[in-house]
Image 1 (cartoon, rainbow, N blue to C red):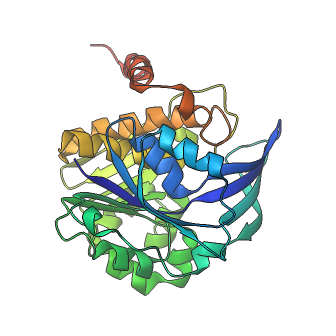
Image 2 (cartoon, one colour):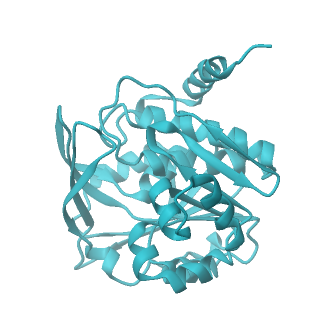
Length: 302
């Protein structure tokens, strides 16, 4: 298995209705890689500035992430985000963003990473995603994430990317924006017409919808009463999903369904603390235990 993620590393300051945390390790690449590490090795391509704290490198090492593709740029600063969650934690407000290294050239892909077969292009400019994709000629599966900004401002580039990837992960609002279709089921079908062989539409606490050429399923979220910080939930969901797919080397419809369930479990732990604090406390067997509970919850009987 060779799973790689290209994505951001950030320093977040987060306000929730009950608590706040300053200078927390975050970023799409970080949450994804930590989640995927429960299933096997994961490589990370990302850039940070000279201000990146040494103790955060120790956190990444805790998860066994291959950091050969991490660039620490002298004279640059690390991406920073400050946000606030409302009483309804599905509602998030961005208070400040400092792009810093994210506004610079994308990081280089180490030559020995180019044999990576399972590729996840975390959210960034679609032209950068396309450029990074070219580094992995032997890939078995390439999946991309995106956001409303690129759908609104870079649609032609995004549409070209979708012709090249096997899967797309995005949330419900983004799916409707991309397809101009208010019905999620029809929106999912329309995404497949744009090129990918499958699409996963995240619906926050309400779970996810998978549309594939072989069919579609909807999985509910895990009913967790201990939501502390939803930041990174979508990225950890994607990391769990891709980690399982890479570990099993099976991208069939039935295995994608299982992968979504594992992604849901990782995300359900991630939201129980700020940053990666909760994921640092668990091991694979904790995911399996929660998955057993989830299966029982979904058992409809005879």
